[in-house]
Image (cartoon, rainbow, N blue to C red):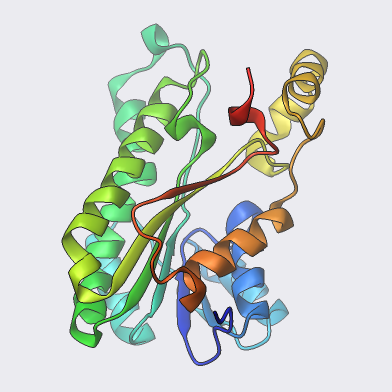
Amino acid sequence: MSFDLSGRTALVTGSTRGIGLALARALAGAGARVAINGRTTAAVAEVVAAIDGAVAAPFDVTDEEQIMRALAALGPAEILVNNTGMTLRTPLVDLDSATWRRVLDVNLTSAFLVTRAVAPGMIERGRGKIVNVCSLMSELARPTTGAYAATKGALKMLTRSMCAEWAPHGIQANGLAPGYIRTDLTEPLQADPDFDAWLRARVPAGRWGEPAELGGAIVFLASPASDFVNGQLLVVDGGLSAVV
């Protein structure tokens, strides 16, 4: 089985920092022409300059017109990684409806919109790889994560729906579910001594994950090595979800 991505274009949304940046680097390392996405041209340009062969694809993943314009300029993408996401740690009773809708748009609707724009080309070519970055919260929940967990659980099922509809066209759609990874989104939790101690005791690996440790999983899911893997959720969490 080949893990070589040479000659393939991979669009990674939300790839100017954190997990998205690590996934983009891993795909580029496997030979892909990686399209870096973010809302600001400056942030995208900075990352493009640091990754050999990368190209810029700045657009707001919640804006349908921007999506269509950017994808027309980019050209066919054989690999799509829907990574853009946000989280707000708020008790459900204190969560206002505007914030709920914003989390829904960024974490779930954006994946639908971008994939809907990319999928027709994949169907026409008879092949394609879609990886939706889900979460440990696609399966589990904690207090104050209600909106985030709801969107990530829905994203898991959207992934399976993509598999059900597009597998006959040679497309594989899978989810990548990171556990607790050291990024700017988890900085408040890393800085909390009680949470940090709980995590280290709870995770069999005894530590936080690093963004680069997701690289092997994304290359596998984006490569011919996973051609008969479809509709699955690959969890990378140091064993947290495997034990009680």
